[in-house]
Length: 189
Length: 189
Image (cartoon, helix red, strand yellow):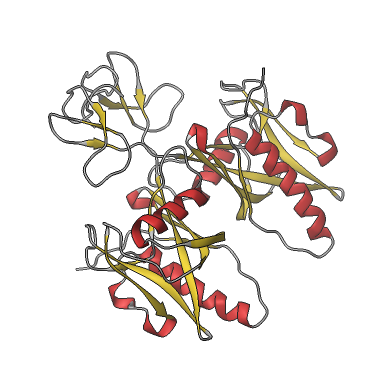
């Protein structure tokens, strides 16, 4: 950020009174421009195929990670709830009709200022279709998941949590909320 | 928002290509200024006082809702996780030393573009003290909670969920994650 969005004056980085962090502050009109993490919200759409549990994934038609697979998810919008965001993204990216269930995973990605939430969901029919941000949409059993071609670590972790928890549920257990923090990888060499 | 924060030109409200919502767009440099919900994160600090479970509340020294009581919570910052945000806010507002536990509640407040998260926590000692944003900090049993003087509905709902879930836990049950959406009240007359 270079200019004040309220008065167009150049902003400066400084610690406001009663604060402990540097913010973009406008010396002309006094506006403090706070910057906060964004939420990415999606679903885990599940289909039971002759006793085999399959999950719907989308192959990305846009950057970042064009061509890689992801659960349907995207940035939460103002004026919607997290559940509504999960439903909307599943519709937009996969054209999928779902019944949304409980929150399943919360993943922090602090170095990119994001928190990802995924809800469990049941696919209501097989009339899904790739939206404008997807190249294709397909169902995968645990064995079929293209683990090497998943777009984001938050999807990988959520899928691993999901199939592990599903195995417990099939033994009489319950679904739980799974939390995981993903820190910036340390590069060696 | 009136001016582009990248080039200082006046912005216009329009629906960008491949989008479905109005955004502030800069006609000069093309920047799309997305606006997304913010996260408010806090804790439910618990102290066992001779068999009675008490919760730590803060009386607000700042607007909005100056003078009203709240669980320690505040806006999540960039470069931190939700757990770190809950710890930081509990330290800043209540000077409280806690051990943080699992996520307990997620509350959507779509008309103010906020999602509130609360984590269960155990107070490690009684050396708490009001921070600059609090007038006072005190422990309350369920019967002592000043229900009429709670600052925000998200705190009221979280406290109600907490004491109901606590009663189940004392009967051998488990803590669960509680979700609730708070929509704008409809005003009559």
